[in-house]
Length: 501
Ligand code: SF4
Image (cartoon, rainbow, N blue to C red; front, side):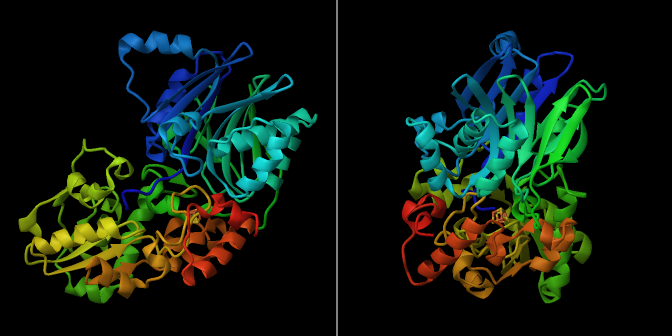
C-alpha cells in the first residue's frame, strides 16, 4: 500500500438502557478502528439534555489509570458517539483539522443535533450554498458539518427523523454512513442509498447495550454481538426492545467500496458473508491461477509487511512456493508519510520496512502487495530488492489497476496522482523497475469477496461510479486530463468543475 493513502473516518456509537456510562464502549470501539483515521479523534456523550464533547488531534490516546475518573467526569451519559478521522475534504492545516474533528454538532431555534460520519460528499459546493442561506455564518471544515446542518434544517421544518433523513438521502450525492443523537436523546444511524461505506449494528448479551460501528472489530473489542450490516438507504433507531429498521430509499444498485476489502478494513472484520482476511487469502490464490508462468519461474514469495501478508499466504498455499518472512515492519516507526518533508518521502519505505538481504540475493522474487496507487514507494522497494541482488522481482497486486479517482472517502481524488490512469501494467513495470506487474482481474477479485458485481463500487477500477454527479465529474475531468489539463486539487472541491457539471 502506498504510504500516503488514507480513508476518511471510523464511526462508533452506543446506547445503554440500564443507564450505565457509555464512554468506555466508545473509547475501545475507536481504539479498535484507528486504522480508519489517524489525524484526529473525538467523543461525544449525551447526559440530561446536554452534549459533552472531547476532540483532539492524532491517534486515540492511551488513558492512564489515574486519569480514568477524570474522563468519566468529562464525558457522562448513557448515549454517545465517537469518530476517528482522516480528512478527505476541507483544509489540512492544524487549525482546520481541529475544527474538522468529529463528532460535530449544530443547533438552530432550539433544535440540536450531533453526528459522527464516515464517507465523502460529492455535491459539497451546491450543499454549502443551500446551507449558508439558513446559516449565514456556516463554516465548513468537514463533510460531517454538511450532513449535520442539512439534517437539522429538515428537522426544523417540522419533519420527523425518518422524513428528514430521507431528504438527506435524496439530496446528498456521495457516501455517508452516519451515527447521531438528537436533542431528545434519540440515537440513530443511517447509510446512503448505495451503502458505500460500512456500518454495522450489534448488542450486548444482556440486551441492555446497542451499538453502531464502522467495522465489526469495534463490536468485538467491546464483547458485543454482531446483529447486521445496515442496508443502503436504511435508517436504524434504538429502544429498550432493540433495533428498529426502516428502509427509506430503494436504489437498484448497491455499491459497497471494493477497495475496503483489499486494504482499508481490518482483516479480522467481517464484511458481507466473509472475514476480510479470508478474502485476501483468496486474492493470493487467484493470482497464482492467473499467472502460472510467473509461478513456474519464481523462487520465493516476499510480502510487503502487513499489507501483503494475507495474500502472500494464499500465494504460498496455492503455489507451494516458500513464503520467505524476510521483510518486516519497524513496528514503532509510525510517522505518516504526509507529515514528512517531501525530500524525505522517497526514503520513508526504508524507515518503515527492513529486509534481510541474504534471503533475496540471487532469487527470483514475487512481492505481494494490496494496491499500486502512485507507484513511488513500490518503486523504492523494488529497487532496493534489486540492489540486494534479487535476480528478478515480480509484483503481485491484489486490487485491480486503479484508473480513476475516488469520490467517496479514499484519499485519491484526482487522475494525475494515479500511475494506472495513463499507464498499463507493462508500462508500470518499466517505470517502477519490476520484471512484471501482475494485477488480479476484476472478475476474480469480485468472486473472492463473496459480493456480486452489482453489490460493489468498482468506480476507481472501471470508471463507472454509482452516483450521478461523481460520474459526470469523472467523465469530464478524464477527458481534460488526457488532453493535458492540470488538476488543481480534489476534483469534487473545485467549484469551476462542480458548478459547470
Ligand atoms: S471509487 Fe474505488 S475507492 Fe472509491 S468507493 Fe469506489 S471502490 Fe472504493
